[in-house]
Amino acid sequence: MELTIGQLIKIIIGVLVFVVVVGGVYLFFKNYVIDFIKNLAG
Image 1: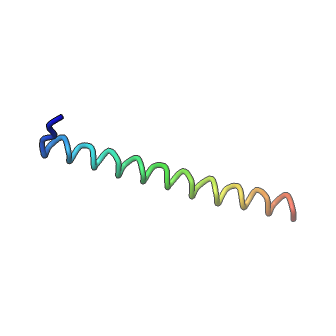
Image 2 (image 1 turned 120 degrees about the horizontal axis):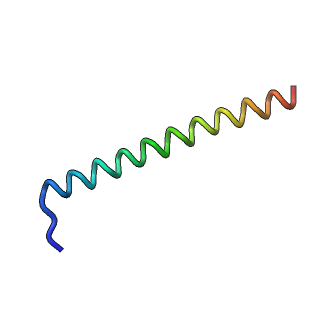
């Protein structure tokens, strides 16, 4: 399977976007869940 530079760049950008989205969702839910638990405890 031959990869052109353009295909390689698209794959790299796709992976970076995926990582950023997953990381953002993880951080958002982590903070949200921690605040939710603090509110329940308080």
